[in-house]
Each structure stands twice: as structure tokens, then as C-alpha cells.
Amino acid sequence: MTLSQTSAIPLKVKRTFRQQAQALTLPLGLVSLFVATCYSLTIGASDLDAPKVLAWGLEQIGGPDAHLTSLQELVLVKIRLPRVLLAILVGSTLAVAGVMMQGLFRNPLADPGIIGVANGAALAAVTAITLSSFLPIWLMDTAGAALLPLAAFLGAASATLLLYRAATQGGQTNVATMLLAGIAFSAIAGAFTGVVVFNSNDDQLRDFTFWTMGSLGGATWERIVILAPLCLLMLLAMPLLSRGLNALLLGEAEAYHMGIDTQKTKRAIILLTAAGVGGAVATAGIIGFASIIVPHVLRQIIGPDHRVLLPASAIGGAFLLVLSDMIARTIVAPAELPIGIITAIIGAPVFLSILLSRRRQMQF
Amino acid sequence: MLSTDNLGYSRGKAQVLRGITACFRPGEISVIIGPNGAGKSSLLGCLTGELKPTAGKIELEGRHLASLSARDLAARRAVLAQSNNLSFPFTVTEVIALGATANAQHLPSQEAAPLPPQQMIEQALAKVGLLQYANRLYQQLSGGEKQRVQLARVLCQVWYPVSDAGPSLLFLDEPTAGLDLKYQFDLMEMARGYAKAGGCVIAVLHELDMAYTFADQLLLLENGTIAACGKPEELDMPQLLKSVYKLSDSLIAQKAGASARLLA
Image 1 (tube, chains in turn blue, green):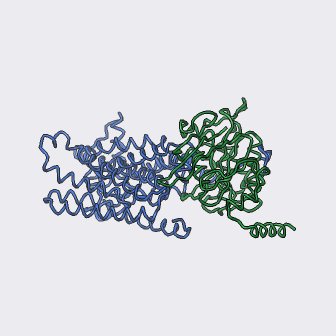
Image 2: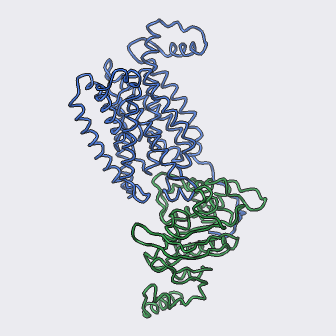
Image 3: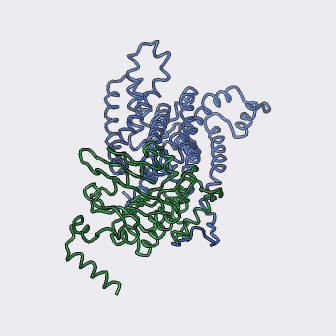
């Protein structure tokens, strides 16, 4: 250490791989996402190749006629487009919610699907489906569409709050407690979901299976209308929260010392992630591990700075789900796998590797 | 100037601090010492605004500390805490940048232009002797190196000892723990330089000889109250150590003997 207040030494910290990656991630990510989206629109029983899809896209923004048959256009607009859009929305929402939750818990293992937040949302959603049969028809007609996302949001919010209370003591979050409490909470939510399922009819049963497996098969424009505002809310909040999230990584006391209103920041994170995860679960069921793979991989490349990590994760999450959905639709065609299975197959090993590397560093 | 008047703090039923009336002046290093559980960290917590006092008041330049927002406080004071764990792969530069960009309110007192963050980070790195580690991962550093990175971050937060809002405050909670002897001295010399330049340094220290050497004002806590306060050379240290730390004459003689042999 030197004592001089000013330094005459020529100090130049050179530009690192990480800084270069940070500059490249967003444009590269957007291009990959665009390509994957276009390609995804071409997959399926109906013959629609990439030039046709692009021509159709150009037609929508005032280009020449794409010469699609009415059936092709119907397939594109009613089936494939909502599906890929839902994949993008769910993917970004889950990945961004994951980054925020991991920042809140100061732990890269916090995943809404693993620590019970998604299960809380699913339980509330399932309960809402069952109870809805008792509600008067006029109420269902007017407020029915909002009931599910609202229930899922409340379920996710209470789960997050409960878990945070359980795992945080004196501003420090204990990882073991967080994971164990998450497992316990998932089990409780699962058990109650079982009770509800036991007392349900065949139609409801089909709906329930959808919640627990996670699938984009039910994509409709209505579902997109539900999720889009919630996803947008999260994306808009990212620049406001990134500095607070960065500071929180050092610890709650440190964040306060650095001028962050920690209570307000934490409350905003809990509400936003609950709204996002609730919305994602309400529209696509529980898709596990998406919130853990994307942030983890991106952190290795561009680092944990939330100013870059949040937008990069939004794009990365969308890319992962579009890709996983393509695999889910083609691997056992003409049938399809629930997308949750694909993300679990990719995600579980990532989760395990983080757990093992952290055990080596004795950071529990 | 930071001052407390009859400050008290309770955690549940336990009264941790009571009747603390003290004054922390710019241009000085104030060192808080005392046995384990005497209330040193709680006092520091109250002074930084992190803990809310349950009795009495704290004033910064005549304004109630409680009336200042986290943001306003952050422009005036920085805190080097004891914990330095970080479970995400930040580089050393990125950690320090968190301090350098923590607040846009902290500006130099004269008309001088504020230092650009990148230069501030580089100068801070040079100060703690870690320039060659700029792009290393924080997690891979040793405990002492992490502590020095945190010091650089904290220094960047209150870079100007006297900012346009008045003297800055630098809080150090057992800053020398885990550091080599050389860096302990370097760190305390740096703190002295900060105070000489007009800043106010408040430190909790365990090493009594270090406290005695560097303190302009020594504050000895015992069971949550002030047992003694003043310039080190004006205090009857042997008597205080015996009564507060319960050290016997033979132990004090032994320690003095060991130090003498070590330096002979």
C-alpha cells in the first residue's frame, strides 16, 4: 500500500475478455433469438419453410404478398406464433425472476421451481380451478380470466415471503435452510395439490397435469395477453433494480452502507418475481431449472453485474425456451414431450455442478 | 462532527449500550476498544445508521442521523465491515467499482473536477497494493487480499476526505483482522492520512498496541458504557487494562517481555 493521495504511475487496467463479452452479448443474443424464433415457426406437420415465414413477416409490416394458403396462415397465426411468443415470454420472465431471486438470496442456487415458489403458485392455481366451479357463472364470465394469474401470483408471493423469512436471519441467508425449507414447502404444496386433485373431476384433472409438468402446448393469444404485461413490468424494472441488486450481493448491511434502501428493494424484488413466476406458472405450468441454467451460464461469461446480466438473461431465457420447445416438439414427433422435461434434463446437471463446486470452495 | 448524547441501544430485553455521550471529530482517528461483548460493534452500528438507537440521539453536523436517508448517508460515510464473503464471480475491479459508483452525490469540496470512476478504481487498487490483481476473480483471493479489496471499495465510496457536504466519515470494523503486520500498519497509516486530510475515522480495534499507537481519541467500552475516553497518553492504560480486561500484573509483564524479546 502506498500513502500518496494521487498517483503518478501510469495505471491502465486492460480490457478483459469479460468486458468484451459484455459488449457482444446483447447483439449476439438478439440475433440468435431471432434466428431460433424464425426456425421454430417452420417446425411442424404443416409445410412452412423459413423463406415463407420471413415473407409472411415482411407482409405484416407492409411488404409484398407472401402467397400463403389460408390454412398455412391459420397454422402460423393461431398455433405456431402464439406458441413461440409464449416461449419467449415465459423464458425471459423465468430467467429474470431467477436472477432477481438469486440476488435477493445472495445465492446462485435459488430457482423458483426448486425452492417451492412455483409450487406455491401451482397450488394456488389448482385451488382456484377447483373453487371456480362453485363460483356464480356471471362472476366467472367477467373475472374468470384474471382469477388464475391472480391466484398464482398470491401463491408465489406468499411462498417467496415465507421462504425468505425462514431462511434469512440477521440479514444473512442460510443456503442449507433455504434449500431445505424449499423442499419442505414444495412437499406441502404438492400434498395439498394432491388433495385438491383427489377431489376433482376428469376435466380438472387434465388441467392439473398441465400445471405440474410444464408445457407450452396450451399457448393461445389470451395467455399471451395475461403474461405480457407482467413480463414487461419486470423488464422495465430491471434498470431501476440493477444497482440495488449489485449492492445486495455484498450483504444487506453493506448495501445499506452504500446508500440502497434495502427494504424497498427487497419488497420490489419479491413482488416482481412473484408476479412474473405467478404469470409464467398460470400460462405454462411449472418449468423447472430455466431460472438457474441461464443466469449461471451467463455469469461465467459476462460476470454477475446486474446491469448487463439482467437484460442478457431476459434474452438468454427466451432463447433457451424457444430451443427447448423445438426439441420437445421434434424428438418424439408427431407426439411432443412436456417442455419441463427438456429443461430438467439440461438443468439438473448444471444445478448439481454448481452445488459441487461450491462444496469444494466451502462456501455454505 | 458526529456526536452522541446519552445514547442507548437495547436488543430485546438486553441493554447493549447505555449513556454513551461522545464526540467524533474530523481530523482525528477515534478508536473504540473493549473486551468481547462490551458493545463495540453495536456502537459502530448505531453510528453508521444501521441500528436505530433506543434512547438518546446521534447528530451529524447538527442534524439527526435518523433523519438522513440511506442515499444521503452513503455520500458522507463508508463502512468497512468484518464480513467479506461474496458468492458470485465478481472480478476485483468490479467489486471496487461498486464503491466508486455507489453514489453520484459525493463530490470534491473545491471547484476541482471529480475524478473519473475508472481512474479512482485504479488509484484505489494501487493504494492497497493489488494493481496486478485487477482482473482476478475476487473469490479466488486470500482472506487478507479480500479485506484489502473491500478497503479499496470503501475508500472509493468516500474518496474525498472533505466533500462538498463537509468532512467524510470512514468507519472501520476491526480492519486489521486477518492482515499481515505490514498491511496492518499500512492500513492504519492510510487511515491516519485520511484523517490528516480532514476526514473523520472511527475504528473498532482488537489489537490494543495498534489502538494505542494510532488513536487520537481512545474510547474504552465496558458492559455497554464508556469506561474511559480521551487521548491515549492521558489515560492510565495499565490501570484500565487491569480493571476492564481483567488482566493480571504478571500477564501484562509477560506480554511486555515477549514484545521486547521479539524486537530485540
